[in-house]
Length: 439
Ligand SMILES: CCCCCC(=O)SCCNC(=O)CCNC(=O)[C@H](O)C(C)(C)COP(=O)(O)OP(=O)(O)OC[C@H]1O[C@@H](n2cnc3c(N)ncnc32)[C@H](O)[C@@H]1OP(=O)(O)O
Image (cartoon, rainbow, N blue to C red; front, side):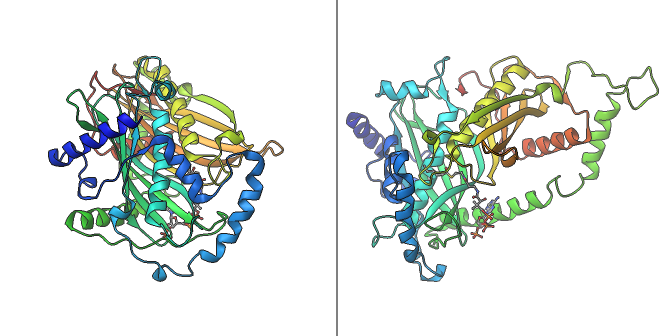
C-alpha cells in the first residue's frame, strides 16, 4: 500500500506537467493522497461517531453538545478557496488483491456500484474540508447528499487490476448547500492517469443532530477558471430549479411532447379494428410494463452512515445494480453505464426500514437504454410507503435495442421524463468495446 502511494505521488508530478485531466487540481498543493479506507475513517473522526451500533445513541447524544458551535449567520464564517477542500484519494486496485475482490465483477471489470459508494463518501469529506474549523476537533455539521446532479463516464476502460485515483473539491456554495466536483482517473499502460469519470454532487449542511439547516463557509474563486466554475454552479442551480418547475408531475407536457405521445399511441392501434381499445405492438418493440424488475432490501445497521441513517452510496449501489439488471435483461447484451443523472435524496432512510426498489426501462434510442428506479421505504410496523429517491441511469448496449411503448397515460409521462433525461446527457458517447463498466 505504501509502495502504491509513493508510485502515485511520482505519477502526480508527471501529470501536473503533462497537464491532462487534473485541470482543477493541478493548481493546488497536492499532499499525500488518502487511501480509500481512510475516507470513511476520517469521516468517523470528524463526526465523532461510534464504530459499533450498540453505542450509536450515546454517540448521537454527544453530538448534541456541538450545537453551540453552529454560527447564527453565514457572514461570521471565513470564506474558503477551492483548494482548501481539494483532496485526492487512492483506490489501489493494482497492489491490493483483497481490495480488488470487493470491486471486481465476474467479467473482470470494476463494479460501478462500488464507485458510487466511494464518490458519495468522498463528496461528504470534501465538504468537511471546506468547512474545517481548527478550533473544534469534531464538526458540528452533519453533511448529507441531497442530489447527484450528474455522473458522466469517459471512454476509457476500468480495469480491476489498475490503480484508481479520485479528486474532488467544492465548486460552488449557497447558504447551506455546496456543489462538489469530483473526477476519477485510472492508471493506463503508459503509466499515466487517464480521466474516466466526472461527477457533480450537491451536499447540504445540517445541524449536529441532522434536524435543521446549518450555514456553510462562503467560497471565493481565486482565478478565471474558478470564477467560471463558480458561475457554472449558479447556472446549475437555476437549471435544477427550471427542470423541477417543468416537471411532468406539476405541468402538462409541451405540444411537441404531446405529439410524440400521440404518434406513439397511433402506431399501436390495430388497423383491422376501428377502435382506440385494441392495441398491438409494432415490430421490434416492447411494452414498457414488460420491462419491470423489483427488489427488496432490509436496511441493516451495517449500511448506516455516520449519522445513523442509511448510507446514500448503498442506496445508489442497490438502485444501480437493479437498473443494470433491467437494462441487461431488456437489451439482451451486456449494457454499459454512460450517465447517472439527477438522483434526488428527498428523505433520509432510517435503519431498519424495508427498501423497495422498482426499476423499468422508460425510453430507448438506437443502442441507448434509459432506466428509472423508484425507491420507497416502509418501516416494519407500518404499511405506509414513502418515496425516498428516483434514480435515472443511461446505459448503452452492444446491440441496437427495441423501441419502448407506453400503454397508459402515466407510462407516457415516464417515457417523456426518460426522454428529457436522455436529452440532458452532456456528450453522448459512442459504443467502444474497451469500455467495461459494470455492476
Ligand atoms: C459516509 C458519510 C456519507 C454521508 C452521506 C450520506 O449517506 S447522506 C444519506 C443520503 N441523503 C439523505 O438522507 C438526505 C435526505 N434528504 C433530506 O434529509 C432533505 O431532503 C434535505 C435535508 C437534504 C433537504 O431538505 P429541505 O429541502 O427541506 O431543505 P431546504 O429546503 O432547507 O434546502 C436546504 C438546501 O438544499 C438545497 N436543495 C434542496 N433541494 C435541492 C435540489 N434538488 N438540488 C439542489 N439543491 C437543493 C436548497 O437550495 C438549500 O440550499 P441553500 O440553503 O444553499 O439555498
